[in-house]
Length: 448
Image 1 (cartoon, rainbow, N blue to C red):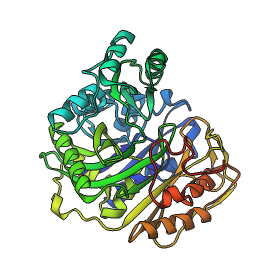
Image 2: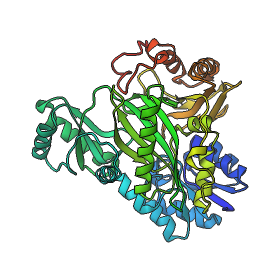
Image 3: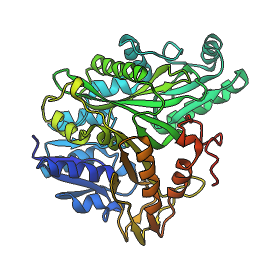
């Protein structure tokens, strides 16, 4: 096992990794920007190193500064968390070139799965269902028109190097195709430096369901069941639950088996997530594979009792999985709400947290990095924490989440806790009758 690990991230995920390190007797090294000098992760780590000014490009995305910090601190490995450099193949390579272990999959795996067309090819080879789509990159608007006619409208244009809901546009008919193509490509260039697109048949009102996998260095891969992630706004997840209340056991088993086959085909090592779009008949289609820990990993930990971050560290240090698929437990139901500092129009609202009260009690977990008196900086994501509720079944988990959201109090900043509660109080959530566009189409009948 490692003796010292650097965490190349900030906020609640950095705190989460520091705690996992402590549980395993590993010293932690935090990195922080000048804006994060007073951040919790920088205060509770065993060591902390400033890596640059506030802008992410100068600090949390600065590979050379992070590598230098790790070497200077005597760390043996780097945990990238999620976001920032977590799915950056060049960062994984830089770690290896400097004698550091990247806590995640190999550089080649990140590169292959990060390119959506390459990932689709792997999925096809692994026998994973795919939505009808283009054979590789759609180079021009003329190519797009050809494929759209062949596939049939509506179609979805997606960034090949994409993620996080960026670089995605839907064309309902040929009159919308040119604008959708240009808009998706431009957004992809801005966010990923790569404007290449591919095309898929658009699935109306789909569910977004994903499967958690773990793989070790000896080729062993297991799944830890599924998560429902359909409640989103602007392609950003808002509420997740595990397991999905929509899937029957036959489709759940089939989807999880597909995720394992893809992970094995990719030679996957570490924790990863295979995402699917699911239609109203429970037919599922491969979407992408995220080569990192997910924001919503705590709900999987809740229903399985397996510490995913600890296993990331253990696998990266060379340990073999000590559990086979048949022995992976699944108990109860868990729901997660992302707590964001934002207003009713989903605009970030940084500010100073004058006071707060966090929920507690049976079945409630809060992962956060904020504290009373902390000033939320305007430079980073608006998520300030995650609220997780666990119960023996969905009804109990939902009751506990409603109770917990009602207890969350923040003064000095605006948060989305009331909005989250309004969704949970809706009939659509109670009956699990929702899809990825439910917020936009008014399914929850919430009043903003």
